[in-house]
Image 1: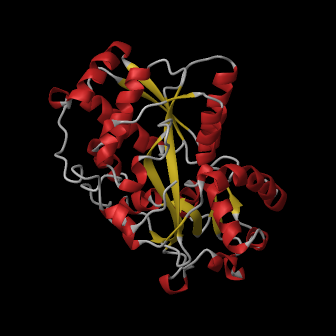
Image 2: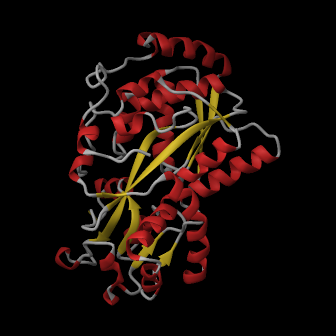
Image 3: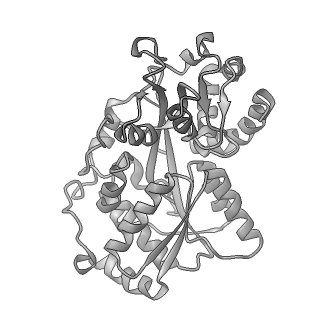
Length: 349
């Protein structure tokens, strides 16, 4: 997984930085037109997604169908670990249901690739993405069209701005006892990555100290937003950038915090299973997800675009304006299972 750099994030591929906006089905590029004709015969695809909220995923499906009429997207939304478990159960049973698998746990893809359970496809539209997302796998077994940023948030009616936590370490302050909400690495791939990164930065002792503040542990990385909106918890830990910004846009009294000790960047791949029942529709979805229409559709839900011609969503900083912390694919694959076990031991869930 390449490290984000300022140059990479503000530059696209040569000749691909200022690609014109793509049109509807009548104006498809040649490589899309050929796939579209084949995909129309399949008529649909099923997307197991642990990356986007349900509302965002459904909006993506509608945008895809608007661009490629006659092809329906069946969005199966869950947390990343649940999506992977479902895919694994399908494969073990010899059932072919999933056409596109999207997770926030990079380790899933390394495992599936080793087991030869993915089919290769590199979308041509990836040429116009930011450089760091363009070629995640030398064998093209998976692609990246989502890089999640995970940070802190708080309820402004409960926590004054001057007193709000500014860093991950600030959450260890006893003043936040009983006020923090966080997801669970057994369900959320991003929280698993958070565990890997923060334990590397501060040691596992960080989470042992965090437990003393009795955080409420949910499932999804976005569950804390619901709890903060309800006034049940005041601080969200490891929430995706999109969830609080979307909530703020709808009038809820939240504020995001880019931690001074680093905002977590989670590269989140997607792949086509080897036994996908609608492979042409899946490949066409890859083209869509790598192009500007997907970036525009998800930007409305505060997802960071990976196309240089699409601006960051309102209220968000550009990638190169954020201090980022991240891990490597190998460290994620090796570390997340251990994080799950240690988490259960420490937090009792």
